[in-house]
Image (cartoon, rainbow over all chains, first blue to last red; front, top):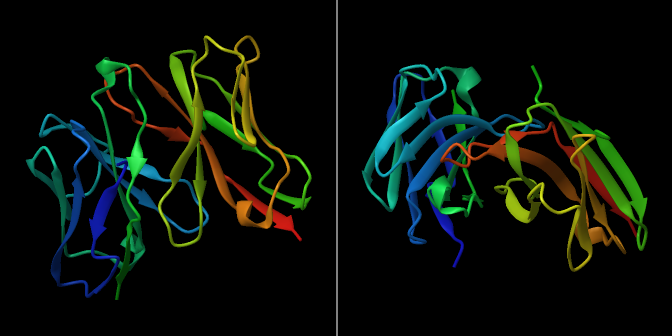
Length: 115
Length: 113
C-alpha cells in the first residue's frame, strides 16, 4: 500500500480564518513533507519532518505552521493567509533516506483557495 | 538557479507513437532521479526512477535513459496512449537523508487519438 491520504480535498478560507490540513500515511515512513504547487508549476518544498522532528523549513512564512503529532500524521496549520497562498498543498512521505529507499509518495493534495 | 532543466514544455504525440522528455541536471551530488506523472487536480504519482549506476531502466512502456557524463536523463513512453496525457515532472535528489526533490518545470503531454 503506497497511499498518502490528505484531508480535506478542497478548502476555501477567508484571510482571518484559522484552518488545518491533515495528512496520514501507514507505510512506516519516517520522513514526511509538505510541498506547495501553484498552477502549471512544479511542487516546491516547504517543510520536512524526520522522525517527527522538523528538519527542513524552506523559509516559509510563519502563517504556515507544521506539526507532526506522530510518525503517521502530519498537519499544516494555516492562519492569516493571503490570496497568493491559494495553491495545491501536497503531502508526501518516504523512508528515511539513509535506508536506501528514497521513493517519495504524494497524497492527492488539498486545493486551497484564500478569499 | 534552476538545478533541473526539463524540455519540452509541451508535447503532442499521436496514439501509438513514442513520447520523449528530456532533463538535465547540474548538481553532481544528485544520485536519484524519479519521474512523476500528474493528472489535473491530482497529486504527482511516482512513475519510474533510476540511480546513476545504471544507464537504462524499463518498466512496461516506460523507459528511463541516463547519461551520467552528460548529466542528462530522459523518459521514453512507448506506444503512447490517450490515457498517458498528463504533466510529467523529472526530479532529482541527493543522499542527504531525505527525499527532498528538485523538480523540473514539467512537460504537458497530449496524446491524440
